[in-house]
Structure formats: C-alpha cells, structure tokens
Image 1 (tube, rainbow over the protein chains, first blue to last red):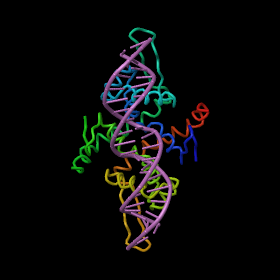
Image 2: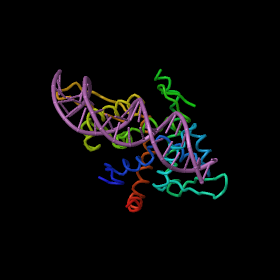
Image 3: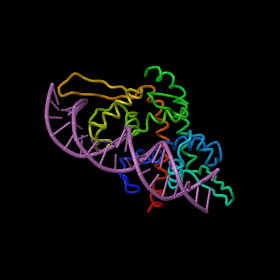
Image 4: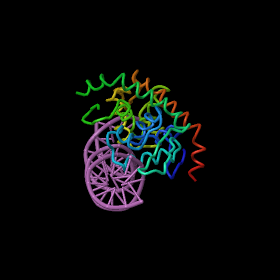
Length: 113
Length: 113
DNA sequence: CAGCATCCCCCGGGATACTG
DNA sequence: CAGTATCCCGGGGGATGCTG
C-alpha cells in the first residue's frame, strides 16, 4: 500500500498510472515528445480544450515531474512546455498504446456498431 | 477525429488510452498477464473494491476485447478471467509504467511532503 | 462465490468571462 | 497569448444489501 498526496494506492502501477490518467495527459506527453510546444499549440492539439482544463493538466504534469515550463517575459507572453527526463521515460509506454490503437481501432469500431 | 461508442477522440492515442483509463483497469490487466484469475482474487488485488465497480471494469475490458471470461456452471459458481491476445499486446506498456513508478516513487513522494 | 439492484457523492472536466 | 476566477454538470466510482 502506497500513499501519495493524501491518497492510497494498492501498488506502484496503480500510483504511476494515476499520474497520467487525466483526460489529456497522455496526448500532451506524446506530443511534447516531438519537441517544445507552446500553450496555444497544445490547445489546438487537444481540440480546443478550455484554458482552465489544459492548465490544470499541465500544472499537474509539472508537479509530478513529467514536464517543465518556461516563461518568457515578453509581450505578448510566451510560454513553452518541454518533457523532462522523467517524462521522456514514460513516452515509450504511450507509443505502445498508440500503436495498439492504430492496429485495433477499425476492428473494435466495427464490432461496436 | 475518431468516433467510438458515441464519443469523439482527437487521435488514436486519445481513443486507446480511454479504453484503459478506468480506475482499476491497468492493475487488472497487469495481474491477468501473470495468468488466469478468479473474481475474488481480483477483488483482493484491487484492495476490496465493491463487486459493482469491479464488474463494471471487467465488463468494459471484455467488451473492448482485452479480456475473456469463462463461467463454470458449478456450485458455488466459478468465473475465470484471462487476457486475450489483444489484451496481452498492451501489457508491455503497463510494465513500462510500473517500472517508471518503481524508479521514481520515492523521489516524487519526498518532493511532495 | 459471483453478481445483480439501489442509492449517493464527489470531483474531473467543461463553458464563459475577465485580466496583464 | 497565457492565465486566472466562477459556476456547473455528468457520471465514474463507491457503499450496502439481496439473490441463486
């Protein structure tokens, strides 16, 4: 049994998975693995999620050490997001899921109609 | 843009990740990768989740082709769950996350206190 | 032992509007 | 352009009790 930020987890997988379970986190991480992205770019990628939601997801990813944030003191403001080393280490898992999806989407889609 | 079961997804990863985003799905899949498990065993593993919740997760995993269910017409009843081939293909991703967690838990835990 | 049926609560996620 | 502050809703997730 593990505890983290006041919550309990039955095993390490339970805990680690929780960190990236947010609706947009996997997608964000995956796209950041291709390089730096600005806030607005991420918003486009996620299909126009509201700023509030996107910021929540980004803040949590930052807190949990997956990404880093750079603020440039310019006008208009510019903010860039990058994967950290820790964040980068989890990308392979997402790539596997992505490939799995590419492979099985059409089959599952048909079966569900 | 993909659609599945009446919902929209921005990319394949978004869709595939959604299938395993349930609170207990990753843990279930991971443990099934070690072999057949009965309902009660899974319940123990997940730290006594209610039957309702566990059943929901299992039913969804079954619908989405990750696991198969075998009911033995005995008394008392016996039900066994197994990974399917599709399910097995996604396990490596979970193992990566698990290893990531093992590696980084203590560090992150400290940073959060 | 497995799995329904109920009832319920919380909060993740979303929509909108306002600032620097 | 990025990031607050509100308000709000749905449903995922949980607790409990009854059956074959």
